[in-house]
Length: 114
Image (tube, rainbow, N blue to C red; front, side, top):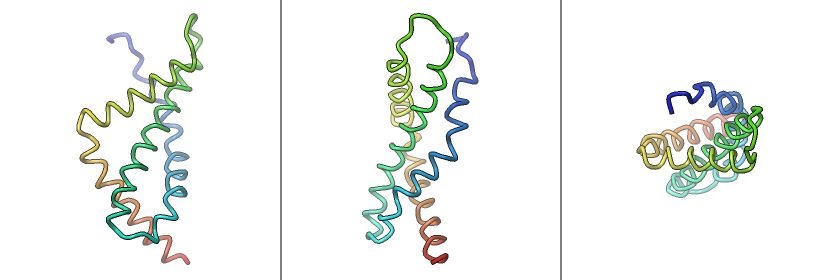
């Protein structure tokens, strides 16, 4: 663990703006639903965004020239690590309400722009 490169999340960091846009577009139909349904769906979009972050990290890691690695396994491992990390560290308890508030702010901007 000591030799693990710290820049390994660079792929996820570079993909984060695109992930945010995709999640925003995915959530657009939910703006018509009641708030409690939006709250539940924000958990789903949170995990979807975390999984996308894991894919980006995995793709970046798999692109490194290290022999005898299975690229799909590297990507899957990154997805699982990201999802499990958010879940079992408790960050989900903080990120879920923040995701909901972010969706509400985007909804307000979206409805105001129409």
